[in-house]
Length: 429
Image (cartoon, rainbow, N blue to C red; front, top):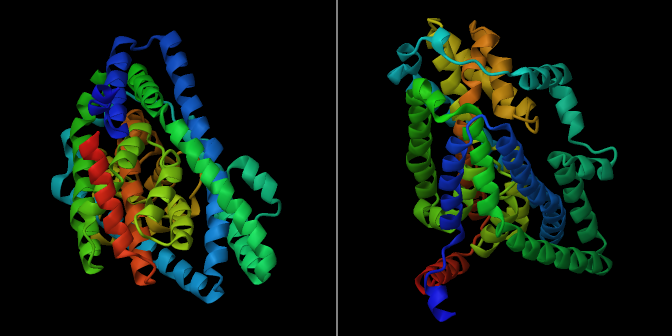
């Protein structure tokens, strides 16, 4: 048994192996409908397991965290800082995507009419319904008229809204509220234990999810858009290393420490292209990393909906890529308008299925790109989605530390102790 433990693979390595096997299986079973159906269902089962545990963790952790915080003024301050931080970082991400697109001109190197088109009807219907709702309907949708309906539909923002008020109400009744805090704290501990069990299936889920993607489109479909994919990933890497690194340095924090702590979650996010898959473990890890529970349980679920740095980079770069492919020249004024439209549209469509692609659908028409142009990049959307989801996860983790530090709710001692514990565990493994 001791010999076996010496060779035990970490979750990150298991997921990477699952990713590689998925690519191989996808290539082997290209266009095989039976295999595609099997892999699709296995992948959906894994995502379903994650969705099963996300909301109970958010409700229990957020209610307990807010109840322990107890100060509505501090909550308002944290909320304000969080939204402003998210908006600034998202704007920088959009601007970076536009800058890279102007420097490297990815759309100039392809013939748009020789690309393989993909059906985007599901996104078109989502875009139309999202556009029809408008900003006021989006704001109204944050307030739950029936919290059980919101829980049943997995609607994150109304659940966060209710949990914040429930936590404040729990704190307001004093001793009587301690019973609720104890119960929900026990619920969160149970759900974290369930999360650890579910994570054992992650390599299988990852293998199936990437396998079905490759099996449906084939590796050959990547070649014409390879430059765009590489450029998108390069831009995301620059955003993490340079811009997130600068923000971390401004708050006297080492970004590499954070990346070391969340490396498994970043790999999981990349492999599944799902932020939900990492949310339970991120809440647990950031709490252990030294950020107070109230900050963690508020910032991470909110960022899941609003802080989409990777998506912002992709949207601006893809919009410029399509404009260049159609030989549409965009002036500086038009690009600034595009930046503003992306900022507004991305917030208005938070929570819409396939939100990044839906935002593109709602935006490209403003710069003269035909909607049909999006059918040519829809096929690679899943592959780019993997990268942008990983960036979103890193961005939300960094935001948690930054807000925690700004509120003096970050323990350096706890952070260093957790880092040492992780390093010791790695040495023993």
